[in-house]
Length: 315
Ligand code: TXA
Ligand code: MG
Image (cartoon, rainbow, N blue to C red; front, side, top):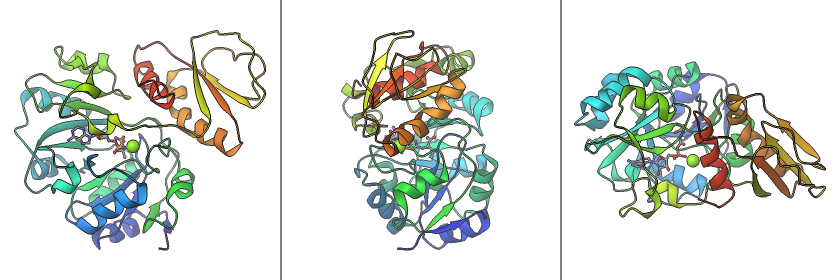
């Protein structure tokens, strides 16, 4: 398959509207989209990524009118979160409408819905004839793609079209909140922080044992995630141990002695934005071990810690 590179949201949407699979930029990470009414294209997403079929896809919408097409029983807490954070880096798990095929939701009776804020994503979604099912646009298990070049590296020849945009402003996948039960639960930390969510819905809780629930609340969390080829080693702040030569470091405080590649970040925003692209850069450079500073779990630090723990195989 030939993958067409384009800067035109209109051209990308025309591929989607004729049943194609299209990668597109969002403010979190790049997505790999298909119209929800094209079963072949949905299957192709799973095939291109090497993704297990029971791992549901997030449905991306342009407007709140489209929300009513895909979800029902939207409770008052979900309504408040939508008012405050849509469009933006938040996914809500809601009761699904029959219009959403089981292949999209992995057979669940809920659907993850997100309305991105990135202007190119919005233009693409506006021109799409239906809501767009899209996981992150990377090979399953690898770090998410935060630039069009990273998408190209993983998926060239496996998808119909790649809509080029700027590097992702946030660099970490959306916050996911399950609003299908009586009390909203944080399923995946992201740029909309737990503190921000609780300022709108104080009873919202962070679920600690997601992997052990049956059926799993967030099926994707049981699979290995975000891992570069290099070993990921987690460090508390200001570790000064000496390390081997083919090693790299990313974090907020000074690196251990002897690392050959260093990405020092000014704040957690920069750390989140750079993390996955740094992992990919390290793999391209043949780095053996990436030392990563664990930030505190306040604010965006919670999402970074989550991705680091998963990349290190500790979650
Ligand atoms: O920022 C993002 O969320 C990006 C962009 C492209 O929107 N998408 C993304 O998709 O990260 P993906 O497929 O890589 O991660 C989605 C996660 C998976 O862990 C999946 O299991 C979970 O969301 N998910 C999707 N639908 C769900 C549902 N109905 N109930 C529980 N978890 C769900
Ligand atoms: Mg993903």
